[in-house]
Length: 243
Image (cartoon, rainbow, N blue to C red; front, side):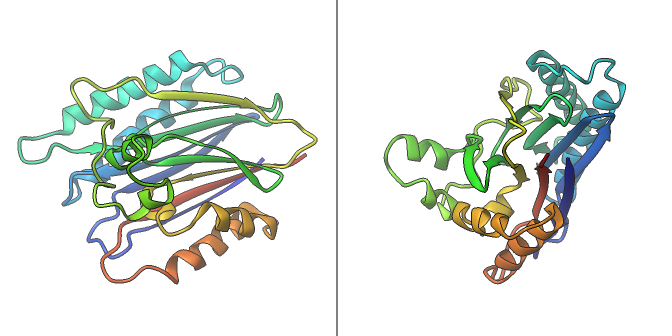
């Protein structure tokens, strides 16, 4: 299992995204967090959440069997850490998407809040994507817009669930078994990344990528060819699981 990460502040004054990829024994823990709050407050929030998750992962006694309940604890502790940083002038918050994958057992688990996404590809084809906790994604459910129209919808930045609230929602959880006969890839990315790179382009660039770094490089090339004027921080982590 190999991984690579990328982060860019775009045209913003601060990069409020945080990317982390750490490995213990046979288990990789990767996360992306997109901070909200402006003037650097968002970066504090995303870094605080990442630090909590990273510390918990490093101290976990049984990393072979990470459960939903453990993710619940990690997110709750991240929420508490951010609440302590908040001030009347800066009610900072963050999205958070976490993936833990075991190269020995082939098990993968993930959890998220917000609109930072986790994609899963098998043999070059997308088989799963997390559900954005946003107003624009709910508009898709209501039949008002298509899924592709979420990318630049007027309400795309309005989030319904994030980390850093007094009544934080329980993180959404998922899991899968990675069959060794197949090639698996995961992409964790913030909205500033997936807004400019379509799922079809993720698949096409994946077909020609020998490493996670190669895959990210080609997707970033597409992104940079499209951004104009004011554009958001954009960050991603790519993970390959190939026997």
